Image (cartoon, rainbow, N blue to C red; front, side):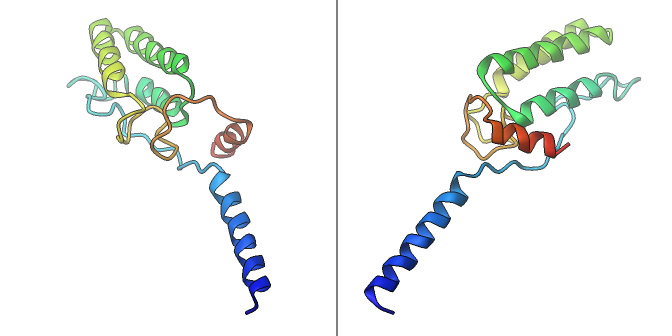
Length: 134
């Protein structure tokens, strides 16, 4: 292959690779329930599971710091509304401590995206991917 041909091939591969790297990739939504916490009580084994699943969907997609705080407070409110206000406070403390986006856990803020993502506003393309995944 000529020098010109190798240069053209290298340029084409670089452009193709750059385009692929820039495209966001979203893992399919998955939930583990209440992540390292019971999904309910002995009598009602899934008493607040639905609260955790809603919380997980918010954590999966991620976003900015204020959205995480809002998601955690919504979890607390949901669990309290089920009649477990003390449990709700414990869960809030746990999610605030363990849900940071800076640990490579499967339940971190923004776990649907490649680690590390941190706190980052969702782009229009990312929002499109989230909507398509439902």
